[in-house]
Image (tube, rainbow, N blue to C red; front, side, top):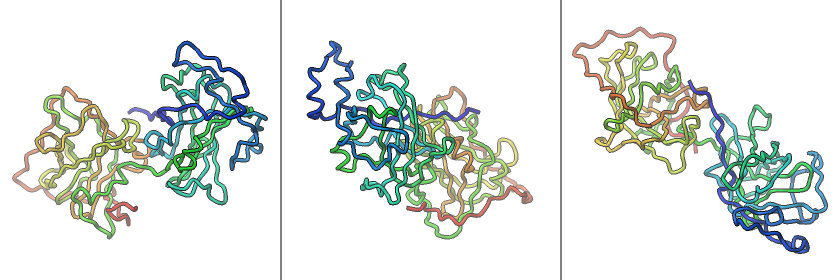
Length: 385
């Protein structure tokens, strides 16, 4: 079983110089390197007076005393919300790179300031600010998209951000000599805001994929184990991906079902891929199959070109399963979802695809109920807005 790896996500794919000020202009001629891709500090860092620095953060209380002149590195583009997001485990990480990070050194602090909403960067009252620290890694080349600074907000560091909230971020060098900020234009246009809503397959609306809306209690059936990646895969021979459901949780399952395949960011990151594929397959429970016996699948789903629901190759997916009448759903445990242990790769495997079992002619005897029966929740099949 693979261990979870933290991925690095970057504040902006392209960053730029700060707006020149009269203070910067008074510094004299700037030195220009003959290699246009290499910038000196004078070209990247623009000086502003301490009085020009406005922030809701009590910097002194956090051990940062600004110099009389503060070097300012400015992001050119708005918040890269598609690259920086809340993971299923509640962690939020930032990797800073590109031109403004050229020659950045020393120890830094990132401040996450909670704001009112997606289109309002006014800080909430009372103030809610979390901080993370990092030391510049001078072995990284920010011009090659290598993060010179990397910050982590999570429970382990006692600085986790609130889920389903909104934040903006400011960065200060601990000695008070420099800062990294969004441009005035992007701040004024509310383009410096990040959401901490966790976006994974649990936020998908199943009614858009053939499942009836159901406001009554829904039975939640949980898989006992993480994703069975060796059993469910994309066959190189025909590009099909089949998913067979069996074992104890499938005991007693009947009726028509929908499997929703959701493309995610990676094998160790089950958050939704921006503009990723979401596709469904349908199946009817085969009650002649005993799910407690090896090779017998109570539900069997096929994703392929024939069914016009083929999955993208060399990608990653998670799967959720809903009874078409909306009364039941089959999901991975909360622990496996938080740990991204519910993901599958669609890298083609040179291995014969498993075949859907042929229904038996004789009905099996009823299997006695055990303590591993589905649990009932009060969650509707349609996710909350």
